[in-house]
Length: 305
Image 1 (cartoon, helix red, strand yellow):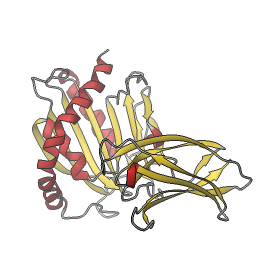
Image 2 (image 1 turned 60 degrees about the vertical axis):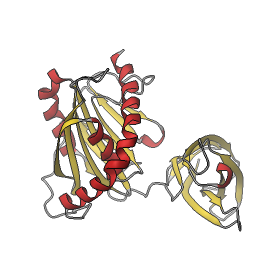
Image 3 (image 1 turned 90 degrees about the horizontal axis):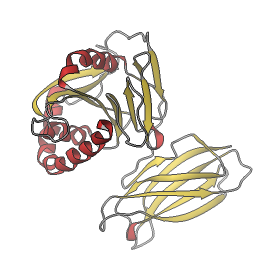
């Protein structure tokens, strides 16, 4: 029951952080630059010694990382393309979308955007610079206020860093009585994370952000196209699938559910196609209402099976 309550609590916390985010964002951006020296990655020199995993290894090839977690623990991937993964000593129920004692979230937003809710919703925060897998980031420790309806005085620790055009948010939520036990588990978890070189860029453009398919996915004659978009005329984008030699297999409009003109909305549709080709490219784009020119285009190479 408590794990189900957590999802509601997280939604309420994030909703309450929206206003604070717009206040904090400029300060956070300047502060990150000052604390990291204006660099987001420091490859090679100064890297910590490589951590040998004696437990279990979770590998996320789509999001470009692997991490060591405790033997006997459970993992759960949420959403398309493993953008959010939970790690817990107990089974993680799918219905509640509980993120686990530990979780790694991947976002298209910048690190200042991802840090803002942590700083806005926690008290007694402490922030430090940290390097994980050769990448500079920010670590935030704090507690949920005592008047919180769901998790009063719970501890939260988050490490936020950018790599491969994504922002990684590595979070622990712990009850006060388990914090001393959970903190070293979290520290070892963070230290074990390694980024996988050769990870392809995420299929995110200026206005269009795909959740699926991901580059180099294998797709059958029926697959889903899902993600979010903004700024398109009449909230409509176009999906076009072409074979490797340029033959168009389908071209379909997609209307996303933006709450208002120009705002971000979501889409999730099923498409079908027939071909004898081995591979192709999915193009998702929107055009100018004035002259029909393409305003934003996301191209995703696919393998047909």
